Image 1: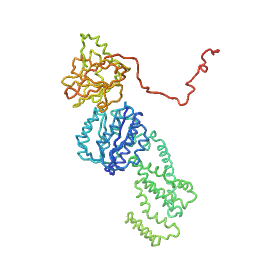
Image 2 (image 1 turned 90 degrees about the vertical axis):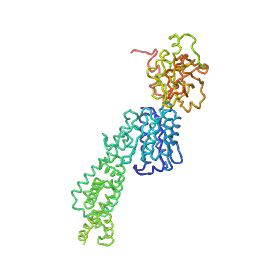
Image 3 (image 1 turned 180 degrees about the horizontal axis):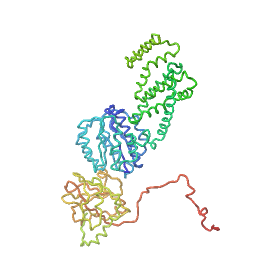
Image 4 (image 1 turned 135 degrees about the horizontal axis):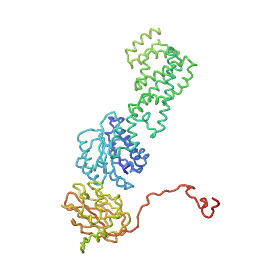
Length: 403
Length: 205
């Protein structure tokens, strides 16, 4: 619960366009900044946070220290990437901004994101560090991006010059699958100096690690609506899957039949399922890879409009026997494919690659003769996208069948 | 403007004069450029203990002799004189500048601002030197900031004791910290006598 005024120095130089931290260095930084602001404000409501950019046209203060999170989040929008980072000027301007904070009782802290090479002399950085120490300003450095020896050495020298009683820290985040913000959560930058972590940091760390008491990795306290929506869609999906599995088991033998409507609906549905699962994938990666695939399905289902149509169809299954088995099979196939692998593309290609399925659809379409050369060409081109050998084998017996 | 005591220093006489340390708000005392955070609190003690620095004293960072000490009082005081006991071997401060009733001064402010009063200090190991103030300027002091820009050549600056001579008034210069404003009145907060059944309206019970 330290009363603190923090200035965050963001690196928005050209180097941060690099995608080695997903989605890009700059975006990863922005996420980390949001998390830090939240953590600081939660640990003490009177804490203030300000933001400035170090590159671009020059050092620019976006927000002076404020406890209004909305202002900080708003200013992070529409930031342009470009120019070269000016570390020395950035730190000095941050110090000036902190000097003019409204509440003089707050401790001063600067957090620097260094994502590009440091162009300053080591001596200059040490001098700046000593000046910060003299004015009792703490400094946290997040070293990411370029990993040359000189840069790390200079930053470490800066840290030793500033460090007073371990109030300043340096964190090096190497490239890797973990997001920048996740790597920072467990560091003293988030948890404060020896306080053992605020509630926010602990919850965020738990959610990120996937080892939480919370379902779906979302803290019900942080985001109750999302947690509720996920739970509801999970239950809906479970119910739908049960119904679909039952129908498919009964009427699997009738997969050759199928109405015109259902087939075209299937096509659109599978397409959408493909795109939706890829959206779900982005969400899933956000929620960490450890999340179960059922969650992805739930998200997919809850976002899918045609899915509501399927609900209606599922309930009417007993009536229209001819149409629905096709549908049920398609549903089941797409569901199974989502569980097997997360790539949306392969879902679609697998469905298309299921030769019997495709030909059955075509057979059910009036006015389309599978023996028509153009149809055969189309089929051939589709198959060439997926595994050719297997499809050719399938195609041969099917052609015979059609004839 | 240093002056020596012109009488043989009987302990209790002098110590009662230098009793302003009791009015210092020790929790809010702070210093800039101190090597150990919090060591500044040890320099405010009774007169008789001024030479007794049992290990705890205020020292600046290596290679940087500047020190800035912020001292708030619990009530407004009038300061007649200041006494400083420095360290040996050139670690005593050589200059002192004072700022009154200003919050949050840092080194760049201190260097650019005009001080209320400045003194040239002498090495004062025995602690018998008193530096007089221009009393008219030090009439209602809620807090004082002492800036020591130089020392006598040592690597660091050490201060073992800071004493204030003067008198304390009972006036407080508190900034009103918390005010609660009512947007709409809450009737339960405003019971009148009639409702409370006070006065002469007791009947029965």
